[in-house]
Length: 382
Image (cartoon, rainbow, N blue to C red; front, side, top):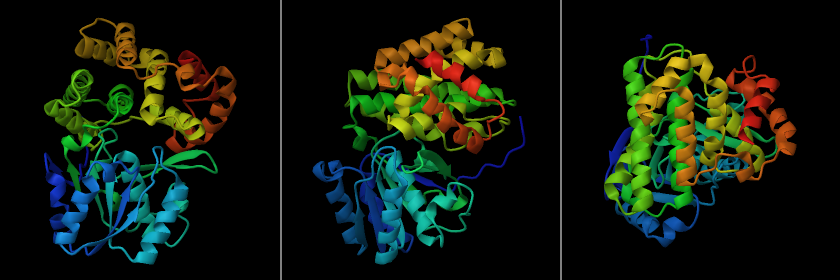
């Protein structure tokens, strides 16, 4: 087990009705005015917005609306929101939605107090030295953004999908009420399942130091996600399954499963970021295509761990059987496993490879993931 420092300052309020506490939570932090960020009008149609507004009004907290944040969030919206936050002199950002809204909110929080161009923070030209406090109410479980410092945003002009991380961008408090996730569509449920599994396997398969306790934690997350996804597809109203699914999403990327590991990388995310940057495919859908293809190429480099995956997750003997079983499960639940299902063809590969040059550099993987290697992986996904 490698040396490690574990730091996670986010408080999670988990359970039914917890969103009604948001006014008191903000008041306890001395907040009097917030930028309320969200995606679609769904939060108004289902009554969540009204519930939040009531809680804020009760505590005398003013809010400024910033809706319309899209899946695969874009830097132009972040810039727009930064201007609004500065103009309205808000003291914090309250994210209501899934990972796309929360990632945008973290970038807004950092960019509002940064004196330069916010995209500089994503490309290493600037540093996050402070940020507005961020609070979150989750309506979709997938990214784990509710309990980490990361935020991924696409620059639609340059087709770059990069991330920021900082101690200043951890949410102060995240409210996770699984009941608010009951109306998530079937498609986004299965895409979310793939996203959580991708977060889990990156270190599990690529780390040069991987303690057994961490492997067991990850295997627990993956099996929980698979079991609860199956349960929710059969009965979307199953609160207990929804709750375990949501907590698994948080655990997959709050840092705990990476404690004591070393030498890991994120090749599946590196590849998928090009797919969603270029073709605006749902992130989880892109990952469910990339993962089996990458695993088929990579498994010989860590044969024992891939055999373990097959045995512990599926009760099978070999790496190849485990990979095939995961791909079969993706097919069963209805998340894509082929580029063609995303309407991406072999003719698109040159554009993807060109985009991946920047990603490979940004992720620090250019030496391993050469154009030849990436071509082989992508062709396995056709």
